Length: 78
Image (cartoon, rainbow, N blue to C red; front, side, top):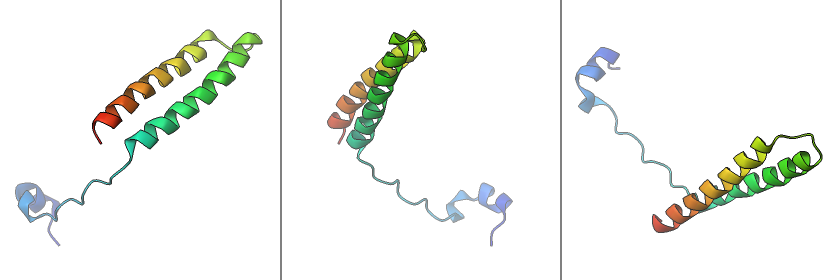
């Protein structure tokens, strides 16, 4: 078994890295947007009843907008 020092000195002796796992980013961004939409509904209800802050609504809205941009990016880079 090679030592750490020999692997740092000769990186070509290491085993090759495994390939990166494939993921459907369209589904990942979509799921995130659904979670942010649920959070938006909860924070809106809390804000309207006087128990929540407006920052939570803004954060969930921003998450939905960024998720939409992620969906556009994922569609373009399939």
